[in-house]
Length: 222
Image (cartoon, rainbow, N blue to C red):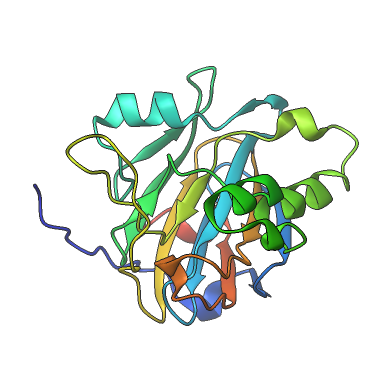
């Protein structure tokens, strides 16, 4: 098992062209141009930031966990990982990572999964599937059929030797971040997870921040 080596970004926050705080339970959708860099910051630590990626040019071509895992030969994403679409198109590459644990097989919480995992009385609780749906409804080119495999940034989901998934205490901390370079026009959809029922975020959903740098300003640094 390799030891995680954090990679810091050379990008300066004051040079970012865009900055937004996403409160726990809220969503965010945004288009990235090729060469732009997106940073997702875990502001208070151990927050799960559920994220979907689509080809802006072809919204039916979305992030593929299977292709990504197969290409890199690793279940977990970190610096150097290239995120692939179902078509095999390269969407983004992780260029900095100070956390080292990002799950891409656990999926997003929903009202139905909450009742199975936790209790029937969790049915009316906020969940990432509903947030994704709300965000997608803002754009005519998407329907609920476009819900796809997602990345859970900062979420710790160890896989046992028997191949089972477990939900464990997070490995992240306040201020840790992951940074992704867009390799094509990419639409990013985030549900900042409102989950109150598992230990990944210490049962305490918290805000996340996104920053974007333009291609012109980052070309010398990526």
